[in-house]
Length: 127
Image (cartoon, rainbow, N blue to C red; front, side, top):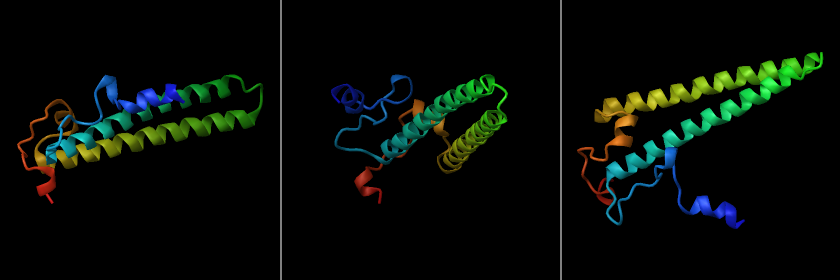
């Protein structure tokens, strides 16, 4: 259990980037948006990895069918489900990106790379 607790104690996102922004005690609205952007990017990358694993599994089923049409049908179903899942994930990411660009003028990528947002209102007063 200690081995599993190590990665959870320091949550990192994509390519070693931290999921939680370093805002200390005075988090602002931009830090909350940054957290959402980090989580979204992490989930997109995680879904791409899961899709690759499922493609490999479906390919294994397809190649080791041994003449069984049930395995071929199962492999085709997995291929189809993975493609539909990737499309759903990418459309969801694109819709969030378009929404952020229309509301703030910056997309998901800009929020991830640039902390300054022009919104400097503290989070506890932003409500």
